[in-house]
Length: 347
Image (cartoon, rainbow, N blue to C red; front, side, top):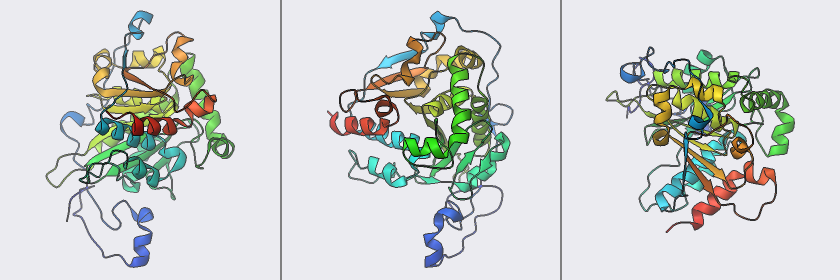
């Protein structure tokens, strides 16, 4: 029964009463289970986790070559994964695992694969939050945030797949979940810092503090990843939407070796952020980074108007569900368009 490790103590189990079972989310990912982390060794040792970049400045012609346009997927397996990843990227906004599981019902295989079975991990959040100067939520498992930089992030885990996701929230994410207008009103202290980061990145005035913080958080998590009983670390992927997608992109390519990141309607990175990423990692971006955007989404295409902005890796444009309605419809309601396409595009 001892499948996971976190720390150095042997896993302990205490039977739960029916009342305690109902509160499982607030008592740790595995209820009363305690798990150990893998020891920091090999390619993700503390000395090697963050790839050190030599100082250089990318030229405009180099920036244009960092992304490759890729046709939308049509095979059911990829469409289902895309729909699940979209709901994970939107998790900081809705905080509903039911929506993640519902996305897993799209082209669901006959044999259960647990691809949509995710949970917030307070235990992982407690291990890594302080390393990046983040505060841990006492109410939402795995939720970390910083009011000073506007960064919001969730540590999610899928024990069946031995996988961890670090999800970065976009603009308007914060302590309150809900629709765009509600988030904007209730999370205004976060939104102000988040818009400041967006403007700094768009104008190329340096690397926003939240981007640096996202990189530190990712490096800390890599050093403290859960492991199987055999000592094999779980895999880690990054997710994010809008500003959170840019943070996931930047953090993933700053690791040694670079990580996978699946980003939705993400902001493009500035010349300063791109130049801070090691060149060899930028060359591997097409293997590691995937951007999904809805057609005519202004945020994902700001580089057409502002020089020095670009995506890295594969860029996939998904057709919208209906005719152009509004900016918020294409950007904030991205999951509607993703799921509509996923349900109807299978060969």
